[in-house]
Length: 380
Image (cartoon, rainbow, N blue to C red; front, side, top):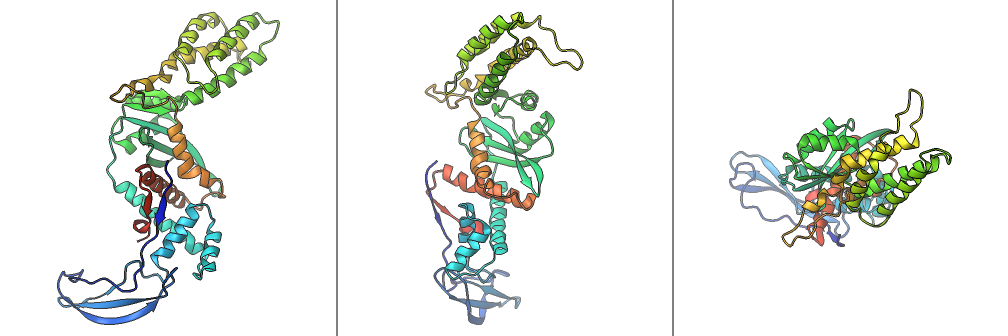
């Protein structure tokens, strides 16, 4: 992601000329002309003109660019929004603006940020949803006044743009299917997720090819086989086979290296050895041999889904994906989690939604290669 700059709104001292009345599209006369004070980084006073429509007699106010009903200019609004987005608290934003002669309280900074977030949400909802070839999905949890809020992120796996941010009541296959359909409107060719069973069921229901994140599988697989190896008794009849097969699996699951199709072939080769392992009785814990049986069965059933990403290629035959769900994990971090760690939870669901969508809006502009992001559309 490239570095970028932000452009604050321009604030003028005199209003622009009008061609016709905004209410009746007819002529108008000047009803009143006066000057009013404004809090801004550079100017202190602007001219405001009040007109009267010739057709209906209605009066209306015409202000200079960058000035609204508020005594603070849009440039101040944007500076407060940018300060908070860059990592300052609302209290620190207020202190910074007060230090340069613009007194506001932290609740006002919060209000400015919420308005910008609402505008960013409106922009994102108003755009047409593209038909995605590859979609990545994942969930995370945010706190709102102590309540855990399950938040779903759906990302374009090829461009990295966040398509949808939604709050869910639960994490099951039916909920995920509804969330993906509402966000995309069409079934993606490939769905990339972690190795949660609910996402596996959702991919089957949608009819999409499913790519299970290799990074998640590798981490979970290493943890499971290490635990099985440690817990098998030395005198157990399964001791030697488990030690040998764990060593063979670890050789195929090395940190920092992508998985190979040999992992699925090796699991299919080893699985018959552990089929005689009996399941645990009521109140008993599963034996290491039976846990190896479950692990290998999962690898055989879903192992090929670790390599579905190889079907997605460009015209030169090069792979466009890396087999992980890192693109969605990155979106979760940059759109919310990194900044959220500095917060003590969100004030409300609405505030959290606006915060996440504002971050997604700015990151989307950066992904589009825009080195100068104009903040005026968010605060106007």
